Image (cartoon, rainbow, N blue to C red; front, top):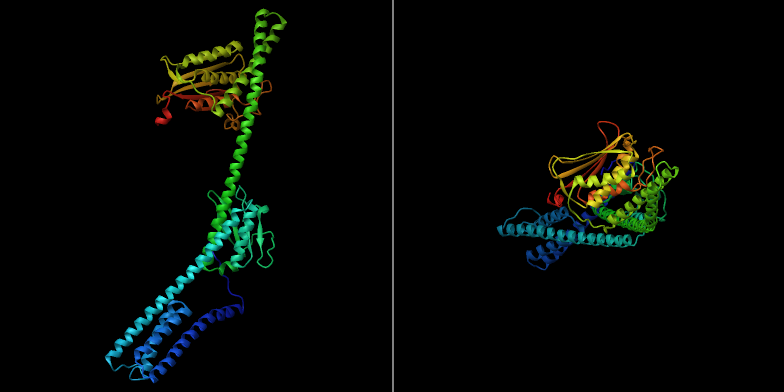
Length: 506
């Protein structure tokens, strides 16, 4: 933090000089008053023919009182020195000279000087400790009061008001508190400025005549305490330390409020997600039964109708639409169960080629006009998986490929072992228009659909790929999407570990 020193105004420098000299002159007056008093008492003791040691004790008392009422080690040193020399000058033979005839007087003079200096030092140290204790007590009271007020604050503007008013009372000057929004910019709605005279609230503007003290939170800067530059220059070390403590308490209060707001938003999102999941489950269960009946009836009618009958294509479309809705319902149910942790994975070692074959057979039964090429290694790859769920992943990826591939274009499904030998890699490629660069990062998000799809493609609701990602991650694998490197189209790749606890063992 930088303070900028400006040249004093005309006439103001002289006034400040005399103001600074006033405490010094007062302390010097106290010093000489006590020494004069000690000397007068010494003369009275001499008139009573008391020993010089009694007079020395009086000077020690003068040193003690001077250190008590002046403060500072410098004054204690000078009063000790002056007291020793005045005692020697007035009360040691030969009088009114700094010479010493008797060696015993030299020892007495030396002991008195050392004793006076030690007494002054201890008294000054004790006084400074008392002053520091009072300052710490006042700081603790101010911080405790501020903490109590901040604890009861209901929002960020109130925290800003409390912090600004507390600093204003401590410094007795105009104080502003500017809060920052989530993007780190000053939020004008939370800007407050106080005047110590009437406590009014005004808008704070950034000027060079102000000095800003940052309110730093755990992750970002939450705001600034704004103090006029002239008042900031006059701050003492105690005020600076107290201001920093107030700023820390204000930052903790703001962080606590932001954390509470984040928890509230998270809880609301959880509740909304739960309501949405329950609604989707209810709708899915209600749709499953009639869809099954429609599919069964349509399939029966297809077997009873010849392909040359005009009604055959109509019945086939009914069956296809019902099957699409049935797949959507199953996806919704599976996804909600996975998100709620109610879907238990029944893992056992399955042949990857057989799972792919079952998925391809299901898809070709509904879309016999398409060609699907399967590539698998000669060795049998046994992969720990829930075969039903992985089959659903492959079906979803193949359905997605069919939507974007013409019947005369082939679709490729491949299975291979990763180079490291720890994962099995599944791949589904199509020859469609590919994936837009803006869609790749969002394609697995729930309810996300691309705005650039062809108009003749049956639009989904953005759950199939989300379900695929959830199932693959539940198996300890990963899934990603990209455009093909050797031609048009998209490629979806997901991996499954050969060892059930492979991630944990890593």
